Image 1 (cartoon, chains in turn purple, red):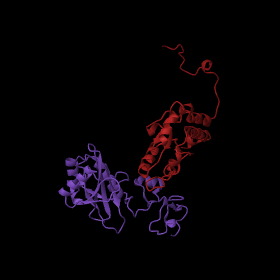
Image 2 (cartoon, chains in turn orange, blue):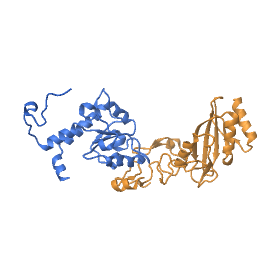
Image 3 (cartoon, one colour):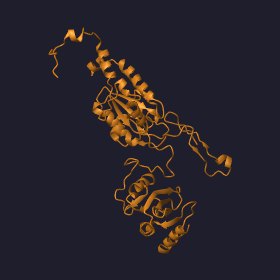
Image 4 (cartoon, helix red, strand yellow):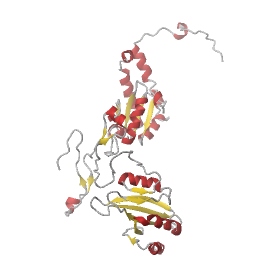
Length: 208
Length: 169
């Protein structure tokens, strides 16, 4: 534990705005977005966190501010320790974050996926395109307001769409999803259960 | 080695008597016994598809061992795996590039109906973009199931009015 305590202390000496973040496992810190490149460069060059193990984001739901948090998991291959760094995006409507592709080349595709799923723009990224969904897809699927079943949209290829008459359809789970109900005080009501959403193109979605 | 047979024309002493048959029967016999697959391997079903092609199950026994990665040379597209919406356009274009007559086997739950992927990203059945002749259940199907599907397709092809279709085309 002493080595990890050293890291957070050293980081806070260098960057006074760093705060400790609640964590059940590895040490974790919060950072302002503007200091992300400098702080991560410090951690990589001075503290031996040479591996970017993961880069992801959290959507804290509409109306919450700050809404988006980008999370970096760093690993030191020499010291065998992890560090979690989280930074809130400044703008809730058009979130953005400085890119760390200059520090780790592997951040390239992570940031593209993050952009694809959450719509967070990474400033300074060399090639910020969608990576899983197609160019022109109008939604960001991992955002909280995006329904689990999906949203009806045209196929990516207009020619094929015209030829086949097919669309991207909402596909609700039959006999599912198996989820907990948020906001329930009564635990019997809140426990995970299957919500039957077996509506489809032929059977209308029932009124809530 | 030089053959002693210098005959260029049909020789009934060597070839036997003339066989009389219907054009449909001959054409369909040719088509069913050399149905070259276009392996559209998109997920784990493709591993079973490789198993079908290998020696233990040996799809060559049914004349379909020649996997053609060029759609121009293939007769039967075997869609083996999950078709995402992003991939759907490519699958349809490859189908369009195949020379007729052409058939499609939807192998496994994902290709048949989207399978467990009730999702914003997955095409809910490949029959939404290409006409499917045979569906194979399973996740993934056993190799025997695909062989059965191929035999079912061959039965179907044997019943086609091929000569009439060729003349009216």
